[in-house]
Image (cartoon, rainbow, N blue to C red):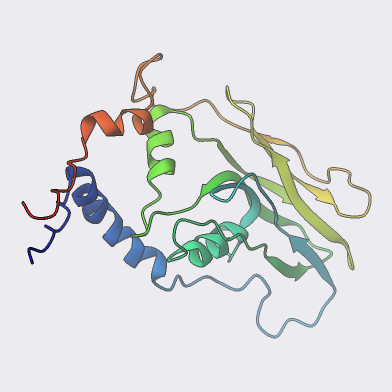
Length: 218
């Protein structure tokens, strides 16, 4: 009895393998981050929590603390990226909470960003395409703040098109901002695609036509 021919590898599947495998290996590796709390510190503390929301199974938003006094710290975006790898195209979101010394000024880097599920091979193709098209929403900036002992603070913000995204730190109890509101800065480089261009994701089928599998017996 004749066996069916195996499906042909299309140009798109080859592209996914080329682009995705290196990224999957990179996301799966360990990233060394300096601890937010100095080793041996026994003084007063304040708590800082990242926030997140999930719009769908494949898309969400993260507002997080990414650095303290120029030292990178583990955050909700990193945790979400690690958790999402090898999840079959499903976004798995995780928040992060850390404690910092209270009573002294600290410089914080805040980030608000969209986050997307990766492909089966670990490539965030939707994020790449949206960045190329100039449609990816994110905002980042530094603020200075003196936390009080026992305080609980939440990184929050809004992601909006047309350069109106914002991120700030607020008191978790009063829901009031405790830092300046960081606004998205105008892009340094122009859009890579002109206005009105067909979105890259929509053009993929025409760029990489899928070859139908050969019928059994041929």
